[in-house]
Length: 292
Image (cartoon, rainbow, N blue to C red; front, side, top):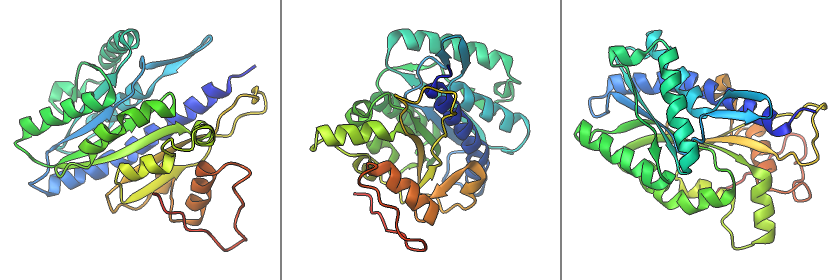
């Protein structure tokens, strides 16, 4: 029987790849227009895992390799023009970090190697928690670029809410830095957040976390549909959220909805409320949800 987690994870990788293909060229165009911007875009997978997803006999590329493939293809294809990109993966667990290091090095060798032309820099994976690792990576980029503004994306994929709660202050310090224009992509099980909020009322909610990240605009993906062939008894509801300060349009091309749109508001309400709490508004009327 098919694994519902495997299906949801494939959905995650597809959405992440679509997001990279759409967002990176836009950020590259911005850096080419402004002298204050670092011409090297920064992309960080803050909770990278081993780099390859394993579900029984099934294996497929994980998020750091998906990001690597997207950046390489965009660089080699000339889409980024003179802009460069820098990919860093961070992993806390020692065994997963070892596997990640091998997978990133091996995968980079299979690609067109935009690094040969200097357009793509792939760092050796950083071992440590996402907060410390991100601060280290960001500080090093500032040192190398003379204090110019850094554009890019931080991708966070916590195993459980506690992993993100423990690191959120350190992550927020970086993405809200005056020299940072880093968008944030968050893939998470909204089911887990609801269960924690129910059992621990004082525990930070998903909306609290999104508020701390300080983005002016949030987008959400659809909820992956689990095929009927799967055992859905323990399936969680997963969604990807993207927080940005950029005034970009056309997110639907990457499969996302602005949370101020009717569809986005409905999806956000489904993410933040339990099935009992969520009551779809009458047709044509949409409640306005404010992130705390």
